[in-house]
Image (cartoon, rainbow, N blue to C red; front, side, top):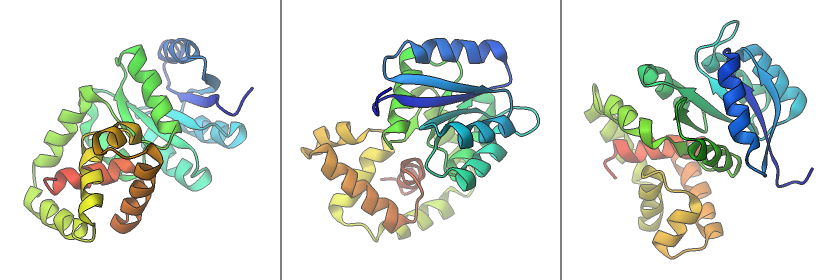
Amino acid sequence: MTAEVIRVVIADDEPLIRAGIRMILTSAPDIEVVAEAANGREAVELARSHAPEVVLLDIQMPVMDGLTALGELRRAAPEVRALILTTFGEKENVLRALGQGGAGFLLKDSAPGELIGAVRAAAAGDAYLSPGATRHVVDQLASGKAAARGEEARRRLAELSERERGVLALLGEGLSNADAGRRLHMSEATVKTYVSRILAKLGCENRVQAALLARDAGL
């Protein structure tokens, strides 16, 4: 086993879904599924014992749901990146998950390549916003108290330099560090440095929160 292999725990209460996800992920040479959980409590325990890079969390699970498990993971294993599995009918839960520090979300019916790409992005410290679900979340954010959110977001973004705002705008588009670097003619390492500085200035825990803040501000 090499350091480049991404260790993953899958948490979903439906055995067939877990089996399908495992089959997809193990088809990638750089991903290993180290354990499977049928509920959130098991997911937290397995994350502690197996120290994976990424945990895939279904929101709706017995014993402990995915959102509660996400909070437990943030306290017990903050280095683990949690990707949220969702459906179109769970937009409110997705927003809560992102607010609690989730590394991103994707739909359960996502294409195999999208699932693999999301795991790789999360392991690399990037956020992953599923193209199939991002618009639904953005629409939800746009409804109710949008003006107040926009004013607060613009106030926080005032702390950023012009270059930092440019990087943040690309985060809002869901670009990875590598893609943002190509757009801005920067190295990936330089973009990563900017992202870390942006998160610190904005008080955001991850790229997803910063991206949503950028959208609120109309960046």
